[in-house]
Image (tube, helix red, strand yellow):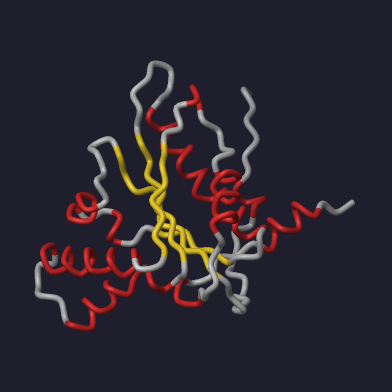
Length: 192
């Protein structure tokens, strides 16, 4: 017996951000995507993450932040082409969701588990969007680590960008990439 869910997961692929086109998710679809995405392991129910949504003109506005950060943080002055690339970075897709990992100190809730929860959330968002017929790409790129961008996003010292999830439509059917041989990655533990 074949499971439709396993079939769906077996065919899932990321699509390059510059291959994503409008329309993006509606407000109702976005809420569904985020609600389904949030169904992840969350030890101690801390909700150790939050969302920043970039759509419409906000994508161009954050692009100006990226270009300014590039000017301030690069060792060599960036070319005009590089600055234009940074300005256009989030305009490659109609919607970008920033997932921010928040470490919430709590006895019995290790930091690592909170970070893993944010990672699971990123992938769940991709799966939820894919289930609605959208293509996605989960990446960070240099902007996730930039001090200037972190400041513009108002991230606290306890927060890090877990990823930016680009969502849009795509007719592009990327070839499957080489996958690991799963049998080569399995060990079976034994005390002997």
